[in-house]
Length: 83
Image (cartoon, rainbow, N blue to C red):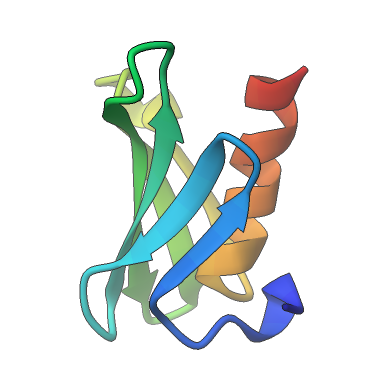
C-alpha cells in the first residue's frame, strides 16, 4: 500500500501503525512488548493540512505538521520510534 494514498482503515509500518477515527482524525499507535497498543499521536485535518499532536508532550512543541496525509505523519513518527 502506498502510504501517501492512505484512504482510511489501518496502515501498518511494523510496530507503529495508523488507525482511522473518521474523515478528519487518525491515531498513530505503537504496540509495546505486552502487545497492548499505545497511542503515540493523534493526527487532525486542519485548514492547511494534517497536523500531529504527540500523546506524550503537553507543550506547544507537541504539535508537528502540516503533512500531506495521515500516512505522511505516520512516516515521520515511525522513523524515530523504530530507530
